[in-house]
Structures are given as C-alpha cells and as structure tokens.
Length: 343
Image (cartoon, rainbow, N blue to C red; front, side):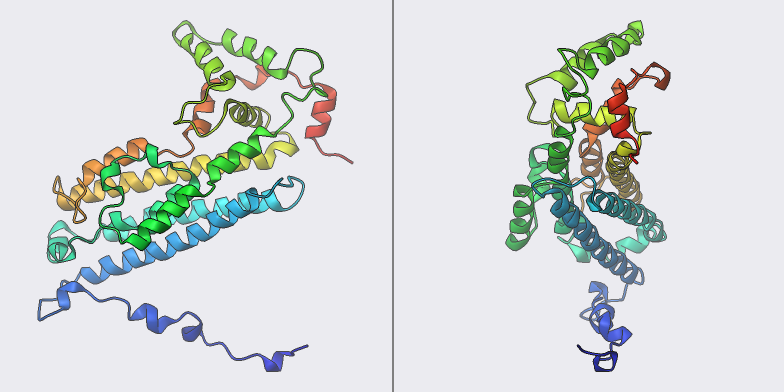
C-alpha cells in the first residue's frame, strides 16, 4: 500500500492548468496593429467562463441520465437523493449564469461596436455545448424555434456531437418512464374493484370549476386519460397522472423526493427562461434590431426561442388540475401507511 510520502506533490497552478487558461484570451482588436478595444477582454472572459459552466452543467445532467437510465431506479437507495441534489446544483449554476449578465451589461453599445464587426461570423448562437444541454434535458429538434439557423455556422464535428445528443435518452424521457411505474393511484391492492383514485378525483375537480372554467373538464380528460399522445408531448397521460398525484400528496414522506425532483425541473425551465429574457434585453440594448454576428435575426430569434423552448411545460400544466387540500380524497389506510414512515 502506498503511503502519504509517496504522493507526488500537486501545485495549484499546475493542477488547474492556469498557463493554458490565462493565456487563452486573444482579442481580435489587438491583432495586426489594430487598436485594442478595452472591453473585448471582458467579452472573451465572460463567454469562456460560460462555456466552462456549460461543461459542468452537462457533467451533472449526464450523471443524472446515467442514474435514471438504470433498468429500474431504486427509490429506496441513494439514487434519487443524488438526482435531486445534482438538479439543485444545476439550478444554482443557472441562477449564477443569469446574474453574470450584469457584468456584461457594464459594457455600453459603443464599447461593443469597437470590436463587434471583427467577430463575424462568431456568435454565442454557435455554442454547441448549450444546444447539447438543451437536447440532453429533453428539447426536441421539432420543437426548436428557427430550425434554419439551428446548425448554421457550426463545424461538422460539433454538429455530430449535437445530433448524437438528440438521439440519446433525455432527462424528460427517463422522467416519463419513472413516473409511469408509480403504482399508488392505480394499483389494485389499494383500489380493489373497478374504481381507482381518479374516479373520485375527477368528480371533485369538475365540481370545483367555475362556469368560465368548464372547458377544463374536457382538458382534464384529454390530458390525463387520452390514449393518443400528440408528437409534441413528452410525458404520457399515465406519467402526468403520477406527477399530479405527487403534487397533491407531497406531504407524505414517500413523495417528498419525487416532489423535489418535479419542482427542480420546473425551476430549471424557469431559470432557462430567465437566461433567455435577460439575453434578449441585453441584445436589444447592444444592437437594437440589427442582425446577429452569427446570421440570426438577433433579438427576434431570441424572443421566439424564449416563447417556444419550454422543456418541462407539461409538468407546469399539471397545475391546471389541482384542487384545494381540504377537498382532496382521503387515502385508504393501507396506502397512507405505505406512503408514510415504516417502523
């Protein structure tokens, strides 16, 4: 067994490879005798740091996919705790990335014009890591806004990486499989005979609707009980029923982690929306209605993407079917016991 004295010394700068990182900034404005644009250094460092954090986000999301892609996730092991913990980390990183726009906003439009035209056709739109992240979370190609720009200006090896990510399993696909096997609301050992939990719940839900909300009764059936699943849907009706049950009874110990998982995915969509909103405002401030350096329509493209790119929207739509706690159907004794702590 090697002892501590055999350990080769590790030094901070070498461990972090600071020589590579700190010498990786080469402003275009300082080349070939051109006047150096002061704010280009800030622009480069901000975007380099974004790409490093995208790498970390992919590292976390890929690990979550590896856990959830097991033949059967063991809900009684540390697997789900790890998934929820890593999703929480993803959320914190995304919040930080949104806040970093404050730093970029210290650059004025005239400061940006000092070097903007030297960047063509480079653009943040060419961040292949961000596109992979969206795909790994579950954004489908058919659901993307501006597909004609999607792979423009990318190198073939980057396109291949994105295509491979789109072919692989995503978080939302694995979430669907996990939710579909939740037994509590429909298992015959809890609900003998023809009736299920949903028989009573539908009566209470439809009875709670105001006259102006009566259309929600049909939406309830189509969303939660339809055998036909439109191509744009990521979660089946069965998975949506499980998600609704988790939200309704999240106070039971067995459903605490599942609720945290669903809530974390909603928060990821929320933070990605914040990122896009802040990005739109920054672009409008910097270039107005001009075309982006990568050839996209600039702020208009970003607005379209913000309106369309919601990955976990079906979880948020489940809020349409909630009822007040005091009206919830009482769970039978056996189910309540199985959802609680066992001694």
